Each structure stands twice: as structure tokens, then as C-alpha cells.
Length: 375
Image 1 (tube, rainbow, N blue to C red):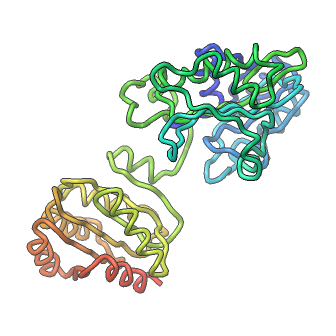
Image 2: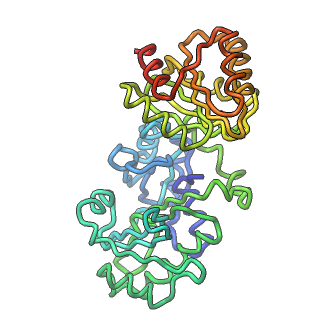
Image 3: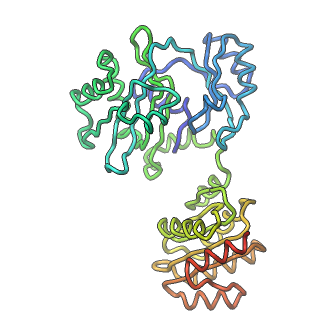
């Protein structure tokens, strides 16, 4: 679950990390009142993606009228596919230096990593790519967490030793997000060092592990319905389906993450692009297949559907039965290509043929066929 900035800051504040005073504004009038109360503020778009500043989603204002005008411009904007539902009006900071502080999972190292850089701000991604040595890294022991000398060493390696007394407690508190909230990413960019030497979270990102959602029902109940994200992904989540939207023209259904990824590659290799894909998992029954096809077809960009199923736990005849039911109930008129193999594949293929659906002999043949049919 990705939290918005103001939501992440509420969590960081509970962990003991200093944040600036701020107010959520759902409309321009609320933004004006926030500025009248707080003084000069930054009016910030609240969407779960980066690049808000470069997209025009953050504006510094001095007066209530300016805050009202800024909110009118920002609310409703589209930033990387997300409509801005509200803004966060936050007290402008007296900045001496902007620092980057982040935690994430390093997949290559198979470990959690803390990262700190004296060069924080909007271009941190470019910095990581062009000057990776400018970012100091620490891989703390997952059982005991980072020790004080390790955190001090991290600060000195980032050329921030003069601020170690202020930075070390904040880094330690951010690391608590792992154990307290099952975070997979926690980031403060910029972590502001004020002219008075105080450390304040100027921004915040927090993403929690979906697999641990049952331990954090309060976050789901409090924050899940604020952002209008991809409507198809939201609908799929309601139906307990694993679904991802893409930008092509072929809808893809498979059983298992590896098979879905392989099918995406086959379609790409054949000259097509996936519009979306849905993983129906192992042991999928007929109603699950029908449900998945229904969600796939909600996207108007889909011009044809490729279904690639390898039956282990999943029975081929169950999949075929679900496909026939779905085609009939959804009145499907788009091209449909099916590759069916594994448990009860013979029965499944016969069922498909009997209902006018010709199965593909292999994944590659099926991918070529659906790409040709959707050109």
C-alpha cells in the first residue's frame, strides 16, 4: 500500500520524526484558510508517485489568495496517470541543506538497505544513476537493526558528520517503519536541515508490504480510498485478482506469475504489446476464469485476449468451462486465443473445440496468432 505524503508524514510523526505543520485541503477555500492560519506554505499535490514538482504539482505561496489560486490549478491535475484529489498545505521551511534519506529492499543483495546522501532533492534518481558513490549505504542486521556506530559511520560516509547528532536519531526512527509497519520502502526527500541545525522531514514516502496488510487494518481503513488510481486495478483488487494495467492492445490471462511474465515476453517478441494481464493462480475454478476475463475486458484498449494456462493444480477442463461461460455471458466479440496444457488438457481442448474456440498448440504459436488478429 502506497501512502500519500501527508499520510506518510502522519506515520513518521508517530515514529518521532519531526514534520512541519500542515493542513489537508480538499478544495481551494480550504487551501486559503490553511495559508491564513499557517503563513507562507507549499501547496502540494497528493498522488502516490514522484515528480510532482517537475509536473507543476508543488507551488510556494505567500498569501491566502495565492494559495486559493494554486489549489485551483493543482486539484484535478493528472500526474503520471493519477488525478489529484486534494492538496497538502505545509509551512514553508527555512532550508540550509537538503538531504536524501531512504530505506528499501535491495533485491540483488537480498537485504534491507539504508541510504543517505548530502545531495537530496528532485534529482535524486539522476544522482543515483550518474554518481552512485554520492549515496552512502548501510545493510543493517535484520534481527538487531542498525547499531549507533554503524549509523554514525553512515552519516560520515555521506559527508554529513557535522550533523550526526541530529541525523542519527531520525535514521533510527525511520528504520522502525520496517518492524512497526512492515514497510518495503520509506523515504524522506528532502530531509531538511534548517539554518538552526534542526532536521525536519520536508517530504515523505511510505509503502507497506501488501502481504502484511492483515496486521495493519487501520492503515487500510484510514487511507485506502483517498486516491483514484487505476480503476481496473481497483476493481480487480475487490475481486481478489492479481491484475496489472499496461499500455498495449492484447489482454493476457495466465496461471502463475512466471507464466504470465513469459506470455508478456512472447507477445512482445511476436510484435504486439500487452494491454493488461491477470494471474488467476493455481487451482483456479471456472468462476475465477470468468471473473478474470470480465476484468480484462473492462479496458477499452483491449483488442484481443490471449489465455495461457498450464494445468498442474489447475484443471484444463475447469478453465475451458469458465472460458465458454465467460464468452457467452459477456457476449465476447473480440479475438480469443487459448493455449491449454497440463492436467486434463485433452478434455479442456475438446470442450473448447465443441464450443467454437480453437486452442493454440503452443505458447509461441498462440502469441503469434493473437498479435496477427489484433493488428
